[in-house]
Length: 398
Picture 1: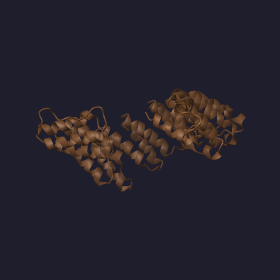
Picture 2: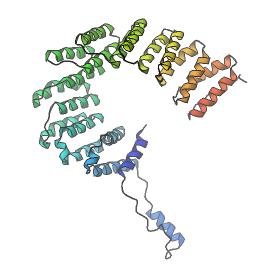
Picture 3: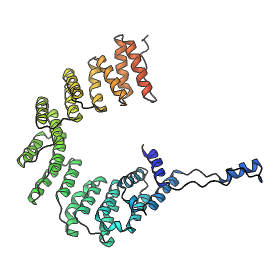
Picture 4: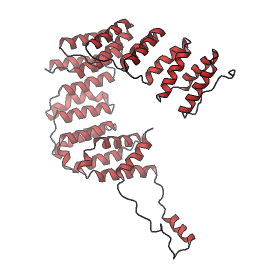
């Protein structure tokens, strides 16, 4: 977990006061040395418990928010709330956000929406709704901006079954008209719920209400439809996007490419990649990974390797997933030389494999009497990975 290191970092940010010099730092001639030691022991600070440490962070945070400059530090607010949410200290999160209401900033909708979203990130949707309802009392005008932050908080809190209700009811209650962003949030929520039919219905509802879907709308639908294997529905949405003269971007193309590979239309995917380049949309590592994975699933090692090398030639850096996709097929088909090279590259980049995957390469090299290469890989892996499980040469190796 990241929480302990983040906790230390936040403690450092908020701890602005200097430690007072102890009056026992210098020897006191009126006290014998044994007495001095007793005094030092009695005045030594008792180590903070985890609870006290978090409370200390929150107290300092609230004190620091007296500074307007500090209140503009969105990242610090996010990281502090994230730490407390991981530790399930929801009452402390409430203490932080409630303390912000006394500042004039709360009258500015942008500041208020930040607080609503913080509750959402912490999974505290009921608190987000309460704050949204309180905004008029705090002299903060509610517009579609704060309404969208409420919707987003609902999604972040995984209260997905409430999203449609909020979308339907709140605008009528507070005289706010939903906008394209509102619809996009709801469509994304339905996609996360795998309720793709509902997402498409909302898409059509959006058009009926005189709002034009934008690239975000289309990319949300395309990503979900193609990923779920609803290829022909995805193609219909793609055609609609083209008819509306909305140019697809890299996200759009990668979604469609994934759909083609899932449909075993990998050659169409290769042609799509060529079209991307014609339109000066440079494929990224995910584009190449989709193709490499498709060829690996088909057991076509040569094509998988070819596209791996094309990835590198295009000056796109492989990521950990790239290596993890390709390595099992290399081992399966006995290409341990390529497996060795792949492992070395990945380990040098700091990527961590499952020990069993690399052990398979070591065993394969040993089986074909490439003992020195196997030894080198064992030493490299063990030196770079401080793990409980270490690689070993097979017992029969010399």
